Image (cartoon, rainbow, N blue to C red; front, side, top):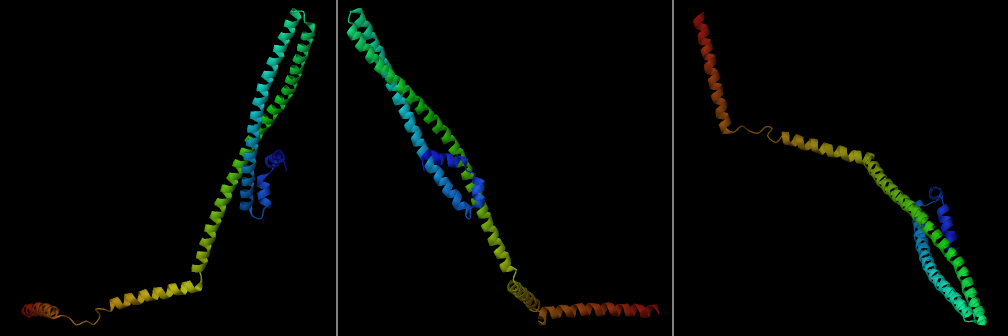
Amino acid sequence: MGIFTRVRDIISSNINAMLEKAEDPEKLVKMMIREMEDTLVEIKANCASGMATKKKIKREMETVLDLAKTWDAKAELAINKGREDLAREALMEKRRHVERAEALEEELDQAKTLVTQCQSDIMQLEDKLSAAREKQRVLVQRHTNATTKKKAQQQIRRYDTSDALERFDNFQQRIDRMEADAELVNYGRKTSLADQFKELEVDEDIEKELAALKAKNTANH
């Protein structure tokens, strides 16, 4: 397939439609980008070659036209000197260079058309390549998001099993047991000697107040 046929196919292609039908869109868009990049390099090389050819033809045209003018001047000189035979030869040379200039002008027009077409193709290819790269970015992002979501769902399902819930219940029971053990640490512990004397002092004060109340009550009666 020629370079320009490939360019036409790429430019006219519908990236979205191709990706929708593809079994592996990421792989397809990657291949498309690689082909576009290779084609772009080739078409740029052709364009550069065409531009160089155009300059070469233009220089040759200028040289040939200058020679045609030179032979025209020589023909005029020969006529002035009475040398009609030389004038005829000079005019024949002039005609030869004029015809060559006309042929070069056609070549120059073709080269200009080729360069213009190449430049247009380059712009369209670069636009198409940018669109493909954007599609690739979106596809990669979607793939990343899908992978992350899948992992999250797998984690949720893993912790949502009865086995996981049972382990959680067992762990909660262990905590309850530890809390109960902590509450029983001081349960039934003997009162210290200082605490016992303090309790006696409190009891003695209460007995004194009680006796005072009784004595007061007896006096009133």
